[in-house]
Image 1 (cartoon, rainbow, N blue to C red):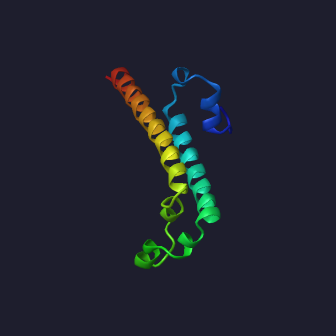
Image 2: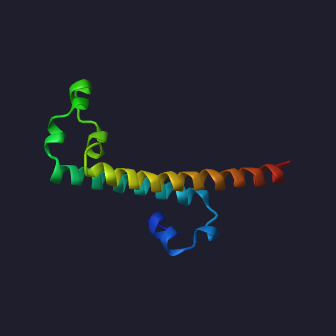
Length: 108
């Protein structure tokens, strides 16, 4: 795999042939980061007033990362990206559980 993006790696190869759980966790981080950047860009273009005038900033005193994907239409991108991320994390948990069971059997 090397330094290649985990998302691109998973795109190239069928899911059932990937046995390293960390690939799925890395892909989740990549998807989440891309979702955050894309959502902020969409908010900046379509709803720039939400960045400077929002209740979260009034309460916390600073711009929270969530502001970028809390408004329409950026929240649509956020839901799609985080749904993909949820699938990747669940796959990570499943494969990691299988790995730990195999290691327990080997060590016992």
